Length: 394
Ligand SMILES: *Cc1c(COP(=O)(O)O)cnc(C)c1O
Image (cartoon, rainbow, N blue to C red; front, side):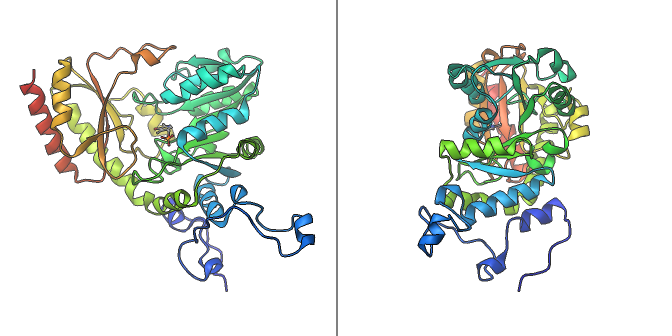
């Protein structure tokens, strides 16, 4: 017998229970992992009438359904459905393909993830879709950039690498007033700390590779959509033949169950370390919207309920070799890009040449950190060693 339906619950409870129905799989806690392509019909009449709950491995399995249902439940009531893609970047390109075609125009935040720009400037341009990059701080002023053929306004908040905060509700309102859809990359906050559909987003994108997977062992992406945007999204996923392997969906489901304890820990340690960086003489600025000193703090506080483990710093001018000495000295921070796993990371970045609508000219070298689940005191001691090595290399 099935258990009685749950009453509405808090996010931590949702993460544990969403998309799971043990009585549907013999009482075992987790849904089985279906490795499946073909599905057999019991009779010829069933086949001709296409009478079956599932049609084909690519179109849906109980594993896919479990992850999609879990993600939809976490996004909240205004989310009508979720599509799973083989990476975060595939989620971005699929969402854009779902909303724009030949002759259309899109507005793209100047601080979007770099490969998103490459997709717009490459494949979308070849298809006859034009892209205008806009200042992420534009707010309601986006209205002036919307043309009759503008199909979508794309946001990423905070911005990639430099963490500018966008006024999502103001931009969404202006876009909707002129008939454009609103897309947002919500990988940084996850639906736990930013509810896109309550702020006017129509299609919300996540690199599940980051915090949903959470263990640096899976590539997966997802796009969540409201009622208005879902049909075009599902149609694009289907006609492109996109699907995710069952073991990767299972890893994402497993990651989701502990997101509610991992993310607050990433947040707490990252804030502690960001505040420590603010006191260091080597650091000029810390780019973290949850810090009171950050220009985007007011918007972050208004719209977000938390922050993850990812932020950047701008160093005071120092020779390149001293920055490398700092990075190479760190024992607990790996040097690597993709974040959201349990481990701490650092990368040097220079995105000045990637921006076209707004200048980015920092006063010194820039580093991005991902704060993992290690002890924050150990991480600070490691960073202290790094600064000692930096001074010695000057
Ligand atoms: C990593 C990342 C992506 C791409 O995800 P992949 O799974 O690596 O393709 C997209 N957006 C943001 C903000 C990211 O950090």
